[in-house]
Length: 105
Length: 514
Image (cartoon, rainbow over all chains, first blue to last red; front, top):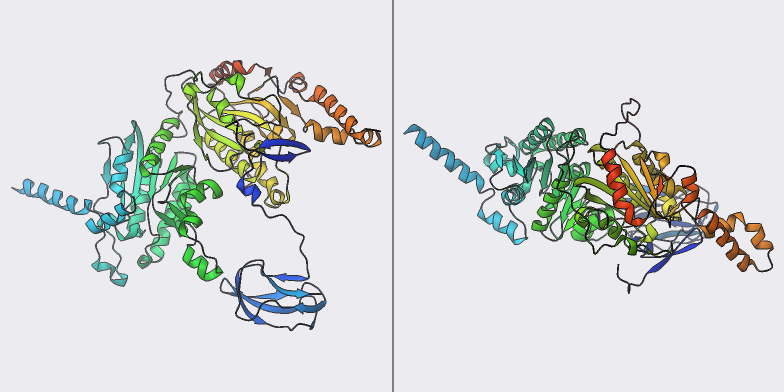
């Protein structure tokens, strides 16, 4: 251990420790609560079909979109009773995991 | 005449097969910085100690024109030899022959040497360098992998099993190394993954290079699949040889003793650890100040660095060390470090290697990511491994031993045989700051000067509880010792634990939380 090294600080039970901070800890994604108004891709894939239009009323559990991923056609369902506000993707788009596919309100 | 020509026939047959996949394929192999399979075996084993078997084995696949192809030795070399006189069974896949692909006979050669290793109770070393299943041989190739995995599992904890990844090792093939005790990887040469970059790109649209997906660094720093990282095959072989000196040949023996030697003077045990428990130091220096010749052989050096594991010798005898590392993430226990420590503890227990644990940790790591990654289940592995271990267990509490971390780190309550604490040890349910905030919450809140009251209460708590004497008064700590007495106490405890004997209840097997 070199004396000149710059160390980070870690808080455990209100005590602040001088220590090296791992890159895994630094790169960790902060937790965000799930917002049911955003339909996200739970897996990377291709938008095969969009079954609703902006402004359309939808019921909880209604099919909104078909996402083709891992050789499976996955039905994405509505998480609330509401209205389709926005569809930021179009048919044929390749999307990565966590992409917003449909916004409800 | 007959015998002479028969000798010549043997020589000719051998020479042809010894060329493996031919000069062109060998050149290609070398251009990648790789040795041939046979060169690797020779580099690893004692000179002239290698006996090769099944040189003349050939495949008998018929489909896809395979009957027209001759694959010398079916792409794998097997045999036995010695490393510093210790017997080893070894196989090395030959990438120059059909890309080291695994067909039925190839796998039968490997399982033959595995059976031999188990029967003769000697270590097994597997050098992996293979494109994967030999597709032309279909399900026979899958059967081959299955037979290997089964033997890896059955031999586990009976003989040491070492995997050396010196080329690609992809798809199902990765599970043989994953089932073995120690995995060695070499920078730019080793590649391990279940699905390669091509498939990942097609199916998921994610682009990544082979190196970034499953290279040597990835497995020694991120995944924890590899235990030893090196930058050349030569360095890798030196690591394997050194490891062999620390471990026994099988689970009914102890590792061979060496001549004892004192630690080096440059590691002064009185000067390593700062008094302030929030300041870091390198716990490896503490280990080096204790072990013979200050020679500490670290395992998984670059993975979950908040815990340190490895071998050293005490009075000439192999000892396993587990130590919290305050220099990295304050030495907390988390998902990865628990997993790393627990497996090592079980290794030492399986192979009759006594354990010395150095404790200095603030507890388990808080955070949503840790909780959601299952820190409960993974953290429990440490408790399980220490509780179950029947080898001599010695514990030295250096400074902090708080909460669940105190219990987990080879405490008296998990049946440590000897627990020593340094005078600066703080054995408490949590750190003074946290504890004072909870116990004296009302006093602090109702005070005219909350900050001052908090400071007072923290100090009060420190005086009363942040020391080794409360635990010592209950017999949880056997002796409070000066740092400079540590080696003496440990050597004595190890010596008198030599014939430790404990019988656990009869059972088929326990259910560790994995």
